[in-house]
Length: 116
Image (cartoon, rainbow, N blue to C red; front, side):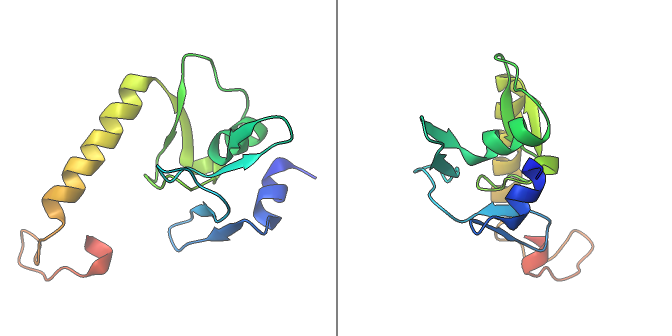
């Protein structure tokens, strides 16, 4: 059975409307999924990437393209440098904060929960 199928059938994964595969078991204090793999504490997203995509080069990190830290969908994960990961995360946080309290788009259309 492929790793992708194992993840999809896991009782520790549920799905959201944006295509995220959400890790519902243990998470650390930053929201990343984790589990004991028999020898060490492993990050669920890194495990998913390594099993479904391939090895993570030592100089790269796994970035959640969806910005959801407990997502383990391999298509939402990308190996990138620390600088790229930090830049993407900061850009998302700044954009989210800037738009958190908006009530209308620049054209005057009302915003709802999907737009925030």
